Amino acid sequence: MTELTHPLATVPRGELLSRAEADPLRPRFHFVSPAGWLNDPNGVSQWNGTYHLFYQYNPEGAFHHRIKWGHATSTDLVTWTDQPVALEPSDGPDADGCWSGVLVNDAGTPTLVYSGRLDGRELPCVAVGSPDLSSWTKDPGNPVIAAPPLGVEITAYRDHCVWREGSKWRQLVGSGIRHRGGTAFLYESSDLRSWDYIGPLLIGDASQGDPSDTDWTGTMWECVDLFRAGAGSLGSAPAEDSPDVLVFSAWDDGETRHPLYWTGRYAGDTFEPEALHSLDYGGRFFYAPQSFEDESGRRVMFGWMQEGRSDAAMVEAGWSGVMSLPRLTTLANDGTLEFAPVPEIDKLRRNHVSVPAQALESVGQTVNTGVSGNQLDLELEVHLAAGSEVRLGVLASTDGAEETAIVLSRAADGTPTGTLRLDRTRSSLNPGVDVEDKSGPVPMPDGRVRLRVLVDRSAVEIFANGKPLTARLYPTLGGERVTLGATAGSVRLLSFDAWTMAGVLEESRSLLPKRK
Ligand code: DQQ
Image 1 (spheres, rainbow, N blue to C red):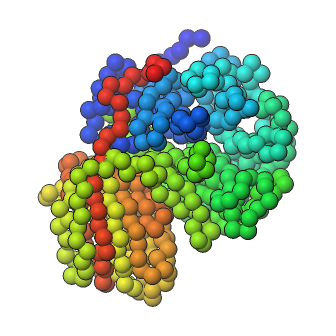
Image 2: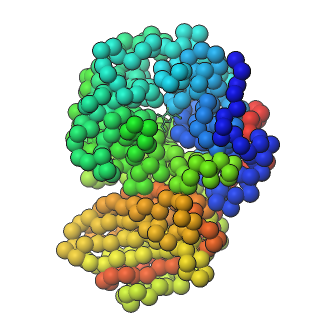
Image 3: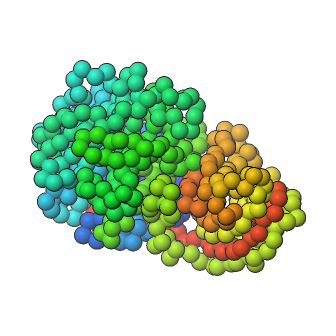
């Protein structure tokens, strides 16, 4: 088959790595592909002690085309070693791309279940790995499911969640039923190759709410991920306080909207939903998340931090897409999920600075934190009286022309929930980047908020009392100042610790890495 060069492949291959490396906006302690395009995390897992991160990858340039599976390994979830590309399109059902999927342990054999793309549609495929997971052989019977369920008019059909239940495998494939809403189709198999269709696990209602709502469930569910939060495993007798969680990324007609999750109960062949939640207030900036249980029993989640600059700017930059830090995913007291970067990340901390505890009562005045940098880990605890607001500025230029603000506020009536908001209106002088406000509710029963902010050049991950807001920032002035001020009411700074963060990426990387 002759491979035509894509019209967006305007940067010569030999220049991609150096362009990417030279970009001051490229993160240093988040995983990024060697250069070219990265999107969803795939096959996230721990195998014989080693963590594996596969990802949607196009080494031809910073655009989404003929996607392969990039692969990196880690012993600590912090530093990553590039491994050879795991899957790439070949003649057959994945000739146009190896789209998202998962890794499972089939009685000792590492096995990938992924979406093979051909002629504009995707079907489930399987590949088995060498014992070190470095080389993969596609199943001759691919696609292992020949077509979406018959008699259902679908919007799309792809991405997989696969688990062992009793003596069988179960699989969900993300989809949507036209004129109804997103769904996940449930299948069962004894060998991962021959699948019986059971039915839709749950069907969303796209007519509910407005398509502009940040919790609209969309017309298709991408990257469904079903797991039990808290004690027990899927399908086992449920502990009262351990809900099952169905994560999906709401999609509509080619638009990646936002990750959401249902809490409820998976029993038999269906999921009984209780409540719908936003997974990350940054919406599309933490898209297509995938989680796994590591060998110590922790649930760890990665998400794709997509870009907020134009397609042309990505292509020019030579790279696109950031993998989030691995997130510890736990159950909060109120039955929702809460998140924090895995504690291993702390080992990148350098140059500790702390700001003294103090009252921030002089509204409008900014404290000189003395903290600066564009690779930072900031950990604060603040107390907000009813009707108060505090503003933390990052990547602020010395002339004040650029600054990104993280704003926490508590309603005047002292309700137990306040708001986290990311104000990017002044984050970039570049008029072509996404600066839309992002916000969401944060539990603050007694007015206290633990705020963690990880800034990595163009990547920011914010956690306020465990609720995440992820986004991208494109400052042009190289500002590194960190500012803090109360903008309403009375705020007490209880603690403020800051560190600069060391980089994690290998010095010299290759677009098509060799085995290490
Ligand atoms: N990205 C993949 C799909 C998935 C989407 C293709 C989500 O499998 O549905 O690269 O970002």
